[in-house]
Amino acid sequence: MKTELALYQALISINVPEQKANAVIEALETDMLTLLATKADITALRTEIAQLEVKLTIRMGVMLSATTGVLIAAMKLLH
Image 1 (tube, helix red, strand yellow):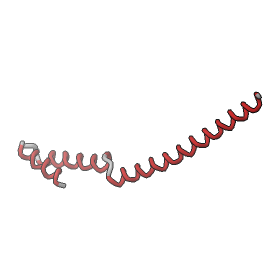
Image 2: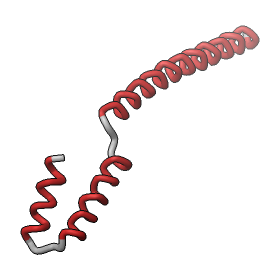
Image 3: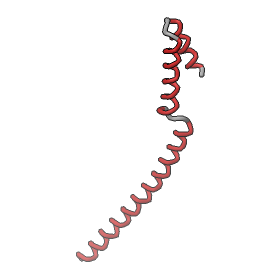
Image 4: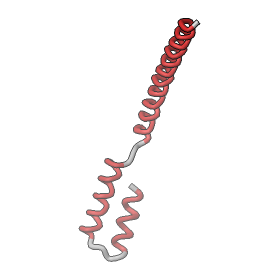
């Protein structure tokens, strides 16, 4: 709220009509609410990334185990 008030006062001080100053403040407020991430958004994103890291680690482990198994089987068949 402090930023909006400071911006409004700055616009009024340079003789921007009050109606246009209000329009600028409303546009800024709308953009800030819709385009910027909040702390809650970032926390949720971090949680999601942590879950994806666990899934990726498990998949990598399974793929490594399967590859090792295939290589051991191939070595036994060749000897």
